[in-house]
Amino acid sequence: MAAEKVFPMTQAGKEKLEQELEYLKTVKRKEVVERIKIARSFGDLSENSEYDSAKEEQAFVEGRITTLENMVRNAKIISEGELAGDTVSLGSSVTFVELPDGEEETYTIVGSAEADPFEGKISNDSPIAKSLMGKKVGDQVSVQTPGGEMSVRIVSIK
Image (cartoon, rainbow, N blue to C red; front, side, top):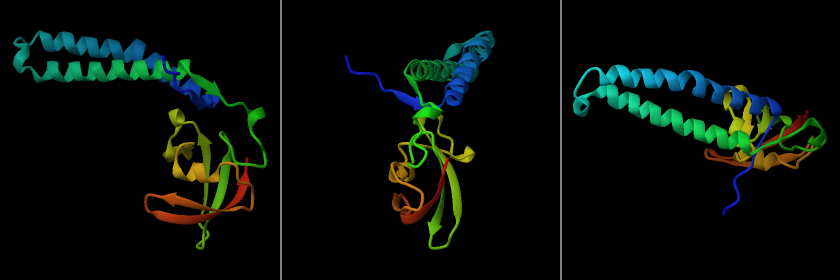
C-alpha cells in the first residue's frame, strides 16, 4: 500500500480544517439531504433539475469531507520550536523586496492544505516558497514564476 501524503501545517491551520469538517458533517450534510427530500417531492426525477443539483452538491460535500478527514488524519504540525529563525522554512513569515523597484511583500509559508494567498499564506509547493526555502536575510533570490523570472531580496524572517 502506498504511503499516505503528509500535510504539513500549523496548529491554527489544522483547527481551521477541523472546524470546516465539523460544519460540513453537522450542518451542510443535513441541508443537502433536506434539499434532496424537497426535490423528490416535485415528482419525476428524470427531468428534475433541483434534484440533480442537490445530488451534485451532495457529491461535492461528501468528497470534501473525505478530503478534509484525510488531511486532518495525516497532518504534521509545524511547531514554533522547529522554525529556524535565521533561515526560511515552513511556517516562516518572510518579507522580501522585489528588485529593482523595491515593492515589499510579506508571506507566511504554510503547507498546501492551509494556503490562502489572499491572507498572505503561500504553499510550500509554490514557486516563490520553493525559491525562498533555506535562504537567509539579505540573500538575493531568483524566482521562476508563470509570468517570468523575478529577483527578490529577503528583508526579514519571523
